[in-house]
Image: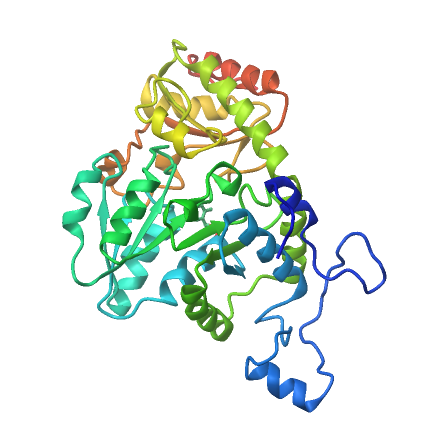
Length: 398
Ligand SMILES: *Cc1c(COP(=O)(O)O)cnc(C)c1O
């Protein structure tokens, strides 16, 4: 697919056929269907004897460009663009699993993925067991003859715990299980799960792939023998990405490495500055020496990521006052934007978890999650430190 050696060049130079008008930038192909040169070509394409676009629910040049690039960056054989990250998570499982199958999943998963495991899959008799990220020794004994897939997120959300991908790849291979990694937090620039034995890599492209808070999108990439079955599922159930969003996401991959470098540089500076701040109980960031898995994080990740979490002294009440005193940072449930965003997981993204479930994945009432953006790092810090100071007072000052 590409002769370019390095990550950045693959992301920039992989382009759909651009000979139509000798255009330099790929146009947007807003077309629902494609024409055939002959009845014979139509027959051959439907019979999979000839490659080509038929209908945008199946494939489209913009979505193909996005996926071709992502496959190169993730070192995957093939893939599918989906309308959202959840469409990717759902299809990567629904396309492969059947009634009676079981999934082993890391406990700390994205909120909607948790709803899928607990409220949706049980309707079709697909079960799951959650295992603790910090107790890998407990995983193997939860594998049963019905287990078909291991699903995990690393770094986890919002715990920022790290799973050893080499170890997990070996565990999956030893038991002949499909290893499916949600690589949304790291992006392929920081970590490539296929290199460690993953069979599927799923993404919410809404986050750092778009990276600019403009669209919802997703992707599934991996081994062709699995993608083939998932493709059958998506082709006939229709969670397809719009060509406009495919175009946007393909362009976004061009700048992803420079954005991620800056996100991570800012995040590390903020984590280092805040560690030991008197209004905070703790600060967590994968590349901080105080992170219990810093060595592992450094082994499998290029940088520490854009997410930093901290626990505000004084718990829930102080955390809420901190949020209400921020002046520049955006209060939103999203992450992976150029703008720094701040979330209070226990009352929003993870509020569907019981108190016990929250505490098992390290979500305390005072926990704040920051997705560090690309603003000047001093402006971000000034806002955080100012709001921490102001949160000591009861009344919100505006
Ligand atoms: C946001 C997110 C998803 C879901 O993606 P959407 O694009 O919102 O559907 C899945 N996994 C992780 C880790 C996420 O952060």
